[in-house]
Length: 421
Image 1: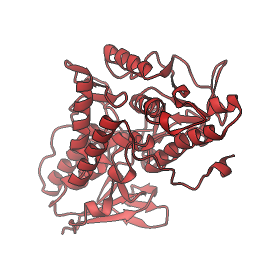
Image 2: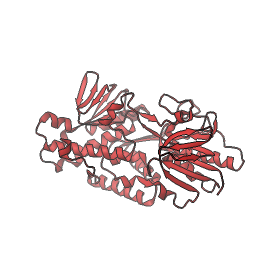
Image 3: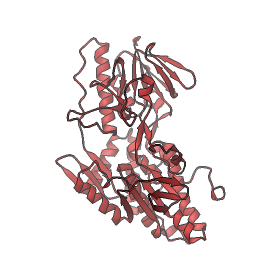
Image 4: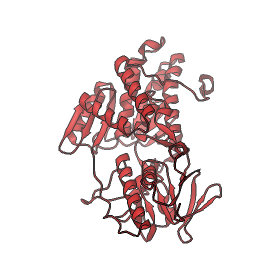
C-alpha cells in the first residue's frame, strides 16, 4: 500500500464510486461518514410510505469494504477543513491528514429561512426521516380512529406534501393508495377513503423538470388517485395545525416537506465560492477552485453542462462524478495525463405515481403508464447493492402489485397514542 492518503468524506453514491474506482490504485483510503450505512435514496420514500423496510435500501459501509485492506471506514462528521496544512477535523476532535480530499457530503432539505418548520414538516433525506414520516402517517390513522371531534378527525386524515418534484409526487401517490386501497377494511370508526392527500407546489406544474406532456399526465394520474393538487401557491406558514398559503389554510396534522434542498457547508469549509443553494462551484475537472488536491462531487457540487445548464442532483450524476474523480486521481498517482474535463451523460429522468404508473423522459423517447412503471422498477432493482436486496425489493413490489397490501406498516418508535394526546 502506498503512502498517498486519500480522504473521502461521504458514503453516498458519489463517495462510494470514488472508493470503488480506486481499488488497486496503491493508495491508502479513509472513508468518513456520519452514518454507518450507505443509503439508496431513490427508494427512501418507499420506506416512509410502508412499502419497504429500512434494511432493504441500506447497507453497512464497513461490510461493503470488508475485503479492501486499503480502505479504513470511520464513523464521524466533519467540523472543519484546513487546506493549508491539508487536514480534516471531525466533531470528536479526530484529525486526518490528506494528500487528496474528496468531499461528497450531499445535501439536506431547505426551508427557505424557516427552519422552525422542520419540527412539524420533516423532509426526507435519511432513514430517520423516513421512519419518522412513516410513524406520523400511521399514527394519524390510529388517532383518527379514536377521535370523536369531526374537525380534528378531518385534520388527522389530511396529509399535506409541500413540493411537487419527484419525491413529493411519489409520496403523494403512495399515501393516497395507502388510504384508499390498503387500509379501508382495517378500521371500523373511520372511513379511510375520506382521507385527503394535498400536494402543494409554488410552480405552475408538477414535476417541472420533465416534459410538459409528461407533467400533465402525472397530474392527471395523481388526481385519479384522489390527490388534490394546489399549483402556483406558496407556503407561508407550517404549524402543528396545518399549512397556510397566503389567505388559504389547510387543517392538516401530517405535513411532509419536499420543496427544496440545501448543500452541506463544504464551500465554507474550503473558503471557496458557492451558488444560491450552498453548492461549491467547481472547476471542469470537479476540483475546488485554487485547490488542486480537493475534489467536490454530488449534491455538494455545482457542476455545469456544456449547454450551460446545471448537472441535476440525482444518483446517476453523483456516480458519474465519482467515477471520473477516481480516474483523475489514478492518473495522478501514475504520473499520467488527467482525462478530459468531466462530461455528464444524462440517462433519463424517472418518476412514479402510485404502484402502476410512472413517467420516463429519455429526451426524444418519452414513456408513461404501466410500461414506464415496469422499466422504472427494473432500473432501480438493477442499481441496488447485492442479490438479497434485489430479491427482497422485487418480492415486496410483486406482493403489493398482486395483493395491494403493504407489509412494512409497523410503528416501532416510542411515541404512543397516549403520549401524542
